Amino acid sequence: MTDVVVTGIGVVAPNGWGVAEYWDATLAGRSGLGPLTRFDSTGYRAHVAGEVNFTPEEHLPGRLLPQTDHMTRLALVAAEEALADAGADPTTMPDFSAGVVTAASAGGFEFGQKELQALWSKGPAYVSAYQSFAWFYPVNTGQISIRHGMRGPGSALVAEQAGGLDALAKARRHVREGTALMLAGAVDGSLCPWSWLCLSRSGTVSPRRDPQRAFLPFDADASGGVPGEGGALLVLETPDGAAERGQHRHYGRIAGYAATFDPRPGSGRPPGLRRAIDTALADAGIGPSDVDVVFADASGVAERDRAEAEVLGAVFGPRGVPVTAPKTMTGRLLAGGAPLDVAAALLSLRDGVIPPSMHIGRPAHPDLDLVRDRPRPARLGSALVLARGHGGFNSALVLTS
Image (cartoon, one colour):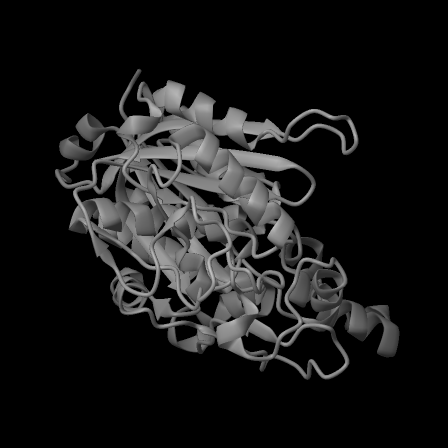
């Protein structure tokens, strides 16, 4: 099969703006989690989040601001960084040779809430015409493709945390089918009262107020996840295609992928995560012993963490592979979390270092070789990234150098 490589990365994360700042913060163990400041969380069950705060006027043209949600503004910035990193300008490429695939979990929820507030308090005349699309799941794909003249394949996927890996896999398929360049991944997040109520009532979000004790995946004191916003967008091409336009550097290869869906609760059938891992490794043409590091889904919910740890033990053996969860420094970024893990995994392959999982003081799974507190130097040739989405989605992506 045709090789597909990553030639550019763009990142917006709670602990770093841009690839360099994010990677420096991640290796240094600097967390972006903190008390929620976007609104008063006093009456809610959860109070800690991973926020990305920026002044959009400094990064985007004024005409885009009235028609975009905070999430979309972040996505536009990440897209610009990824294309610049790849040295690619889609406006100079033939028509339909560059496309966009993104994932989302809720769309522009904050934009939607503000317009509904205007509707209820003032009337329909005060609702923005941009409400017709600014809330919509594919809005990031649309705005990015318009801004950069990317008229090739365009789509959006919805599978919560797993969706970001699904978007990268779909983009890989488009490149293999002949599209010269694809921008893919996800930048997601919805830190507004409407979505915060839904998230905090799900039973999967930590109620703790201390940012260092709120999100503790694979820890005996795990109390749930911490929502955040941000993510990563990546440029995908074939090595030959990149070389033809003068780009000879790449971060790594998307070597394998699989997605599964969990069976109906109570069916007695096992969850689909192991099948996703096995199938992704088979797609990559490698076995468990060839995997050098796993970037875990790491939900922070004790039962789900235990299920993931058991699957990793079954596939790789007790302490058979280093496991890390750098999302302990950003929170769970909905669809944006897995692409950010992919970016971190590619940077790990480049630099020969595994980023740490932070704040985990009482590991609950002794058979898990969890990289904690500080980076671990290692010879890395491959990485496995896992993501599970609410409702039973499982995705696994294999990267090689």
